[in-house]
Length: 419
Ligand SMILES: *Cc1c(COP(=O)(O)O)cnc(C)c1O
Image 1 (tube, rainbow, N blue to C red):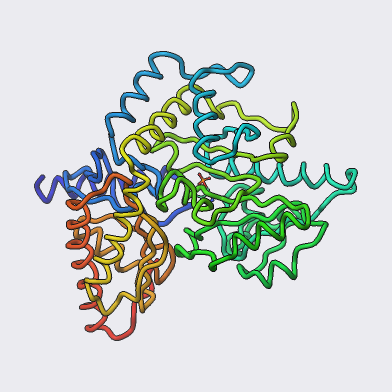
Image 2 (image 1 turned 90 degrees about the vertical axis):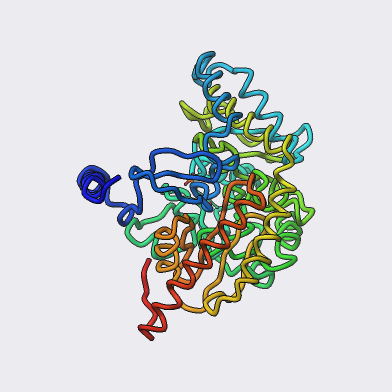
């Protein structure tokens, strides 16, 4: 497309976005019109390599035939009937999630439409547990980890240990206390008045920060000793992303509940709470619900996406390609890069200067989509389908983006702080 025509489209969509969309995010980078595999195209026909996958969502890449077929087939069969009724895809997905999470027969699944809704259900589960224990005298306390992210609704925001996110919306839903992610802090805080402990096994939004070794095992032990639920937020880490179906499985523990969303739908909105053991008996009729949650269309698509992840061995691929990617990033030898955090295909590239925003912008200029998880961390979360071709191209583009920022830093000694 010629420069002038390009200008017209650019101007129009940015004006439209600025005028018509709520200003809850800063300016959008690009107007995307099509995707295939790990490629995205913008309205000018420029191709990008997508190593963000819509924040760990499009696990099979864009427009995967299995995803496309599941949407089309189920849409042409039965999309929605409300939760007064069951549908075969809903029952199939519940059974599949129980199997993959390893709940055994006692597990149960509640469906919502997003991560936040899954965590809202988990919050209610915690309250029901708190009320059920000790003859209703209750367990008013809920523990969560500082810096962990659990969502943007009022309930999940109250669980999110980021004061700057909560500040504009006080008062918060009461009862939540935030602790450091250390066994000592947990030992100190937990007692028999705690209904639940929420953990995020790798803090994705905080900068892809894993929990310390042994923390989850200690959390399991302490929660059990005090009769509190251990609830693991697997919304970003689940669906195979870290090289196991769920990150808690690396630690060999059994939680009381996990929450999932993002990658399980492969781009179709869906979330779920999966309960284990006695926690599966806490909800009773009238305690929770959702009009859309678990409808036939969403659950058929998620069943197909998880089925393809399993059939194609993409959980193993996430583990292997994650290691390959980490080694290749280290081998770039960039003076900006301090190292990689995370597991499998959830990677935080830690930078020596707070220039993650500048690296993301430079990457985009070179045709690569990644994201800044914080000022000094670039988050990489590609489709689980990536292979040598995508990794080679990523390293080439990422190297160029790093060079662009390195050169700018040399020119201007003060690091630019962009977000
Ligand atoms: C994305 C995310 C959420 C919120 O999910 P939404 O679908 O945006 O509501 C909650 N917890 C974690 C760990 C997440 O990464």
